[in-house]
Length: 90
Image 1 (cartoon, helix red, strand yellow):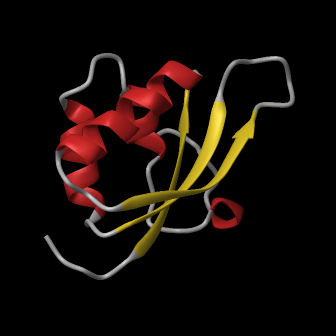
Image 2 (cartoon, rainbow, N blue to C red):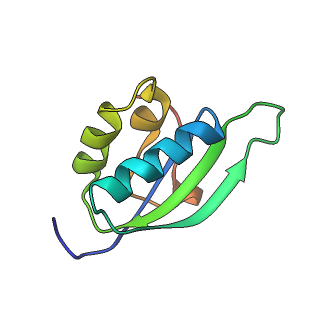
Image 3 (cartoon, rainbow, N blue to C red):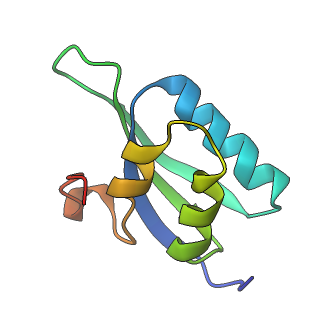
């Protein structure tokens, strides 16, 4: 793991998904700080998230892969601020 801090962003389907990701990051001893948590304004439970982390995106995707039903977060995860992330699943 590297000490370089990166800004990443993604979308989760609900607050429980974000909490599960935070727990997984803490368990893996990945330094992380939530920079933004923006709830969806169209009535959906989705949350747009921007984090600062000391881990590459590939490691975050691997960790998210160990969590159930995290496909939206994995598919929208990008190394960029929320303003630059279209949050479209790939």
